[in-house]
Length: 296
Image: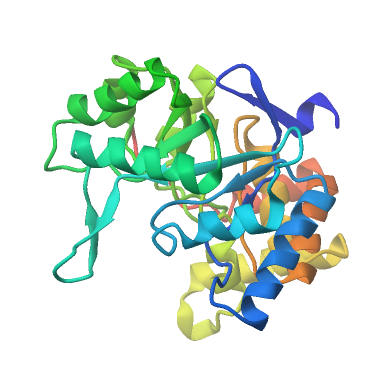
């Protein structure tokens, strides 16, 4: 890979910039699970080295699926997981839970499920507003000092959250919702770019899929975006999703998209987007479809 196709998370952990999000993979026994295992093995065959999962995805079932498909993990493959969401024993509902004892327990369980001695990148799935931020981040810092975590990331945060967290730890990554037609977290991306922090957009092609299926009744902005994305995809003999991923990779050197799919065909299309070249004129046309980002 060329230097532009890789990124060093935390300054030293090199991965390919186009990763894979495992959230959408079915884990139930039978043909769906077999299909998921095949997708994960194809992920590695295609040279993808960043795989994103979380305890929330099936209460650890997604992590176990990844282990079944890929363990022992090939050299250079990073599996990153997330903690900080727990299921109520009484109601069975999921909720944020950033209490230090819960975070510690979830890290230990993730290490056991993934068969790791250390989680090279561990992300806090959400900041729990009911627990002081310093307690949550401080617990992750302590676990890092104990050798259980290599690098710490945060998910779905604001610029202020990032600033506060960086007073306590070195933030290696941020995972926020972001794509061609969703600019809500543009200020967070700018802060990450300034600090050299990896930015992992989730739902990287979601609104493009929505826009390209839009009708005139959906609104002028959505229809215009659909037409422009479709036109550029036709010019490049590509899919709208490939155009959206190529735009993300081109938009900032710290962006590491993690598109997810349960289809090998779509996986192969997504990976091929890394080689898609947008002209300056095409980038300008896509940029014009962007909503105005909020001020930091």
